Image (cartoon, rainbow, N blue to C red; front, side, top):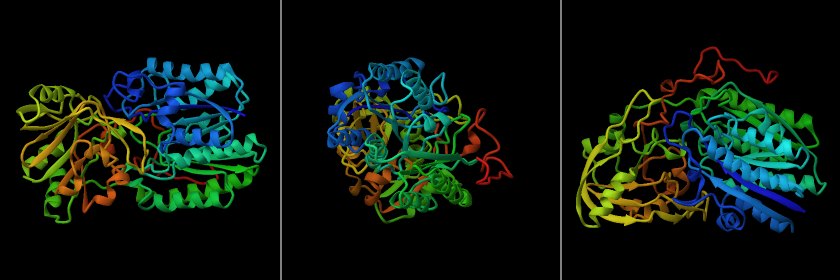
Length: 500
């Protein structure tokens, strides 16, 4: 048996000004996305779907080729040059032929300058070359599902956890279902549907209701015989037609069962639609409330500027409010500001510096802006920004925040970085000499993923509406392509399981 494996992952925030070129898909600055043996070395033993595909192939005694391991942090539209370069590597491998199956580690919310359905376009191109070889796909829970993403593959599985601690498990689910097909042990049949709703990211955690119960039911369906049952909450910061929630169920030669299970999950999601709506609190009130808490560390979440949702990571609204209200013993991870990083490096460890930090990246599609903030303090640390995830999310995977520094103002330690990284792993802070358990307050530019590696350390949590391209106020998002009407943006939206 010969298998082709490939990774092409990007969650596209169409409102984000952060550019998405080819280099962004590499593992570090100045590198190229790894291919072949280099990709195998990079992803073997990691808690990713690609890591699972490698293990499954080896356990099955199959020969395999890993064409490409391309993964970019969420940002704006993928440049056409990057999309074409990445997809061409995969398509060349497909064209060489001789594979019994193809396993793809995709995101499901990639939008390029020319294609709003980036994954579907890839699958269409694969099928133009090879219309028959079975394909298994692992998608992110935040996939915005289009028809070809499902119907051009034989097996489809999506993450069932958010934070995404089951990336590896999802690769196992998608890959095992495909191997059963190749070994003549199963005949996958699929049913899927889309709901007219766009759940709020801040209400999508599988640790909380309603998603906890819905994902638990999907998992139970797989224990009861479904090959894969996936509820895709969707990624709302995408002005594309099919952003929003959908369900895909794969069964073994039982289309009626697939349809029934699909309808059950869709009905659960629709019945709980009011619970997917998020209520905002003014920033000053959130910080003032945090100041009254005494169970430390208090985690202040800057959810308007999350790098894992396409945020610039350089907005300063929350940091400015923390300084204005005089919070003490604070750590901030992180402000993206390569210019300030270089200025601090030039000054050297121990030097007193005065830096204009953040607010350097314009956000033309947002009705608000973020101004630079003057930061005075001592350069406490200089780092190359490289670490590996402790886990449980993407355990063992390489991370690279680029050159980084820590500026100590006396009351606040601010990490400045040169490459976008969300702090979902404790090693992001520890590698910079920041122990979150020794801080009274920890500011994180994160929404939900931080709970994977840092949630167990939190004494309390305060969600803070700062500023940024991943705004939690959806009235600030000017949708022009999104299908309408859709809940909760429009009134009087209806749905019936008899209409898909």
